[in-house]
Length: 230
Image 1 (cartoon, rainbow, N blue to C red):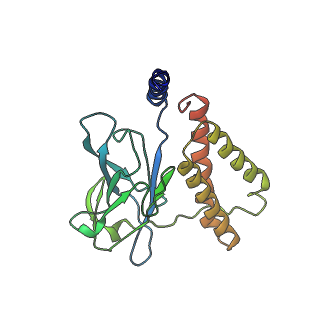
Image 2 (tube, rainbow, N blue to C red; image 1 turned 90 degrees about the horizontal axis):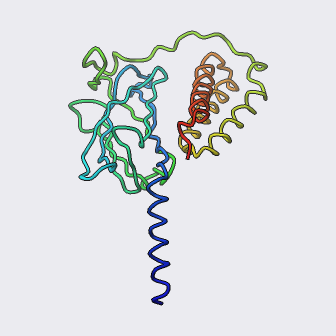
Image 3 (tube, rainbow, N blue to C red; image 1 turned 90 degrees about the vertical axis):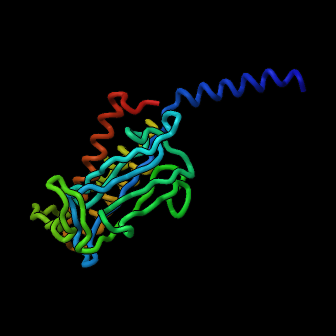
């Protein structure tokens, strides 16, 4: 037993070296914002707060995350200011001011938030909820997103070639250790576009296709540059 002890110590030391030199994969928080009447809203910021486990003593850090033109927010834990994450970590999302019902808490590994990859939370605000925009405070009903007119994409333009490229891009990103949550989000956008196109709404489908393609193109470029190498 005593002979095994030095080997055990060496094993623990090796594990610590591996842990210290292996970067954390990002954990993606994402979702969509709307108001009670069903309209999509964008152009405002939500707040995401949590303890940053990157350096002791741990401090609570907060970041403002924009709700984009598709009425969606997206932030990957593992990036500043929240550089580390772990199972059991509590994350607070604040969607509006002056209303406690706009504050939601997620726990990684619990309540539908998987232990790895990411977590999705869609949120519905009251029309009179106060949100924060670059121009200051506004009521949620003032930031309703008007769907813009886009060119019609035909059946032939969304071909099996594009579908094959999407699948290949996701496979390559997996080799680079990319977050399952990120690739799942890209697939969600693509599948949402497919759903709308097949339902006879090609104009509404195009932004989702473009969103998925843009995400994967950016990710592949960064992977090629060694930005997310293991």
